[in-house]
Amino acid sequence: MDEFQNIDRSAKIVKLKLDIIFKKVFGDEKNEDIIAAFISSLLEIPRESIKKIYIENVELPPEQLDQKFSRLDLKLDIDGRLVNIEMQVNHETDFNERTLFYRSKLYSEELKESEPYGTLKQTICINIINFNQFSCPDYHSHFKVLSDKFSIHFFELKKIKSAAKNKPMEDC
Image (cartoon, rainbow, N blue to C red; front, side, top):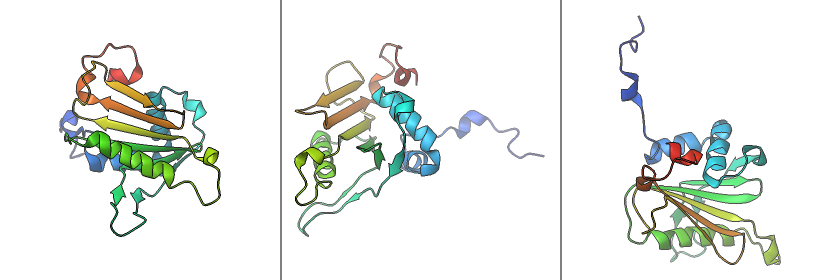
């Protein structure tokens, strides 16, 4: 007899906002279809536009010993675009600054000596946060500065329930 037959299946639901679960699902190249569908929904881009996803080393080592070490939750190369996805459950007062720091390191580490600045890849930071960061009622805030190569998204999970149900990410 199957020992799981009489178990309430709803009790087995695990929330993706737990860091270890999030990394297990989205940090494994075997789940490329799930990752692509997730990114497609988050960024509202066609799924078929995502050709290949590479999961990269999440460590951003400092150049000098006295500089800060950084470890990203998930670092992807999606068709030549660098994507950093951070899942943050607990509120941090300096979270915006941390996001800018991670994004800056990710962006700048790509440029090699004598390469022109125009060769820098588009860098997209996606922050999925379980707290309210901004005073606007929207659950999705998108910041683009100076160029299409600088893009930061915040998805505030606490605001999704109150959002209008007209986008795939709001149907959670």
